[in-house]
Length: 313
Picture 1 (tube, rainbow, N blue to C red):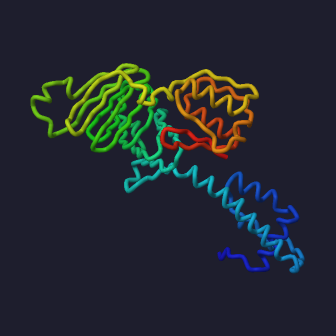
Picture 2 (spheres, one colour; picture 1 turned 120 degrees about the horizontal axis):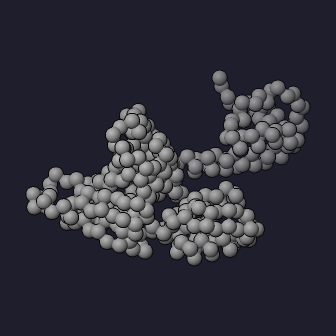
Picture 3 (cartoon, rainbow, N blue to C red; picture 1 turned 45 degrees about the vertical axis):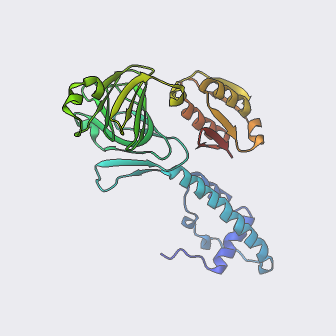
């Protein structure tokens, strides 16, 4: 079916908008992103006064702007793409947005995927002996305990194996991989066919066990796997779950509390946003989840811009 509107149909549509008769349809379109073409404007005959056509075009421009903004928000949220790729049995997620994307796996494990990160895993991995995930970039994992099915993440030549814990992996392909543990235990090993026999006999050089607040760093240039304590630069602090409650507090007050607790820099795109008020129980949430709750409550968004978190209208 050809969905192009004729000039007369467009004028009818604009006239109905001016009278408020399409408000419910527009609201529905904005809420559920449905297409206005589903509502036939030919069903309501209306006489048009062509002398005021310039007003209609002004209204039409407004409609286009409003709907365009709605589509913009939709596309922004969809930039974290779940792509079946070439293999229908593989789920591939590419976070090309400026937000941290949250994904729940079939076994109930949760991944918070940083901007610019790619993750893939079998669609039915819960039926296998291993729960296998491949990734490039940076992500935080909360793995559901399952002693019979170890959880293994591959980042280049680094294998991270867990049974149930929370940890962060940051990988720059061909250069550096860092695994930082928040809770539980994680084993990190190197899978490199070019490793010498002497290195293979030195298990500490190829395999380390990490406990909370410990991390493993693997440098590809010298094939060095080093175990150390978590440094402040790791950014692991934002994944701690805090107990915070706010009663009719300004966003500015909330931001100060988050900055003090998480040691991050949060700012707003315009000063008036700091005066918006929020009442929220944020207990048991990490910083990315708190930012998402604030976004939904105050109808704002946030983006990661370098070392800053920017909250915008």
